[in-house]
Image (cartoon, rainbow, N blue to C red):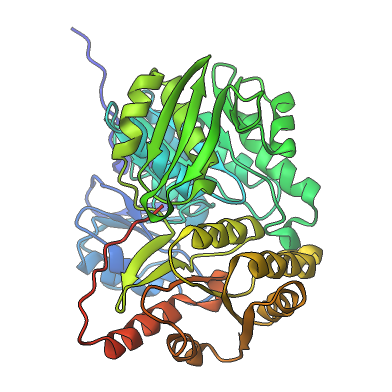
Length: 477
């Protein structure tokens, strides 16, 4: 009786994947669990890939990777201390990593890849999608921000032959990047959430950003599914550029999977009416942020495509336990912290401020620069200042562009707004004004490192309210 042989991530597969690119190989043949590029993350059975970098070079840490338990290394040159592992020598380790990942993906014939792109909400959608279908299928999703030419190959090499679905974020700075990610990962289902002026400086124009995001739907096969946000005109128009089946999601009446009557319940979540094929159900979402409706509808569209009906979906959603980027936690003094320091764009700024306004107490915010917006930067920061003036009681800003937010807030509202020049003074300045029961949002682009302000603020408040007990139960929408 003939049986299908499960693929194995081993020496033979690497040899087949690289072909003539493999210059030489040393050591006994090995089997590998995954590929890693950080020697500090190495576990027993890993393949360490030594990538050159601007800050350090992976070859400097190859010996440490072998010592930590790696079964082998992918190198461009010989490194002392790696002799006990299997070593693969190539001219370009990044290119080799990508080729191995693409070959491994092709060997997983029963796997379906779900690609997710958009300027805002990729991580949220990825996690919601994985959680919603995980009750029926073996699902893996790309971790953290593994959404580029390095992260996606690493994600692919973590997949197991038993995995049914993989949900992968696909990011971009300019055109022809998502098309490469699709070439390696071969998605069958593609989700496009939105298009906005993020990375505008690198992409060059909004037209290029649209073209770049559109590469996902262009790569889908005829039997694939493109899930498009009908509330975004640029995304809706992408239906003309795919041979796959199209499912429109959104609040627009033309959406095939639609959310209506969206009502915030503050920190307890939000509710909405879900409509699928003339069926309607009331849905209670257990985490806050009604701006997440598009992300949730995208996840619902995937679940429905895979055979889950509206009743099954309605039953699953109230029990979702997402661990997503934005964190609401209770600091000492019963002060609510909305920690959204991972990154910032105009859309995510608006969403975070809206969520803050739905929380109880006085509303404070520390807002920083939104980077890489190109010619739209000044206008975008002014718009955020104007919006903050209507929704925030006390505003702090930081960074050169943060000053533009503060100036616009002063112009369009009567709120108390002040600009902080030094990051290391921010936590104390904010703590001096916070009172029990207040809520504060901290948000800005990653380069500002505002997570350090979050840690320092928590420390200061702990010292102020030492006699008070507090909880730190996080709700991560």
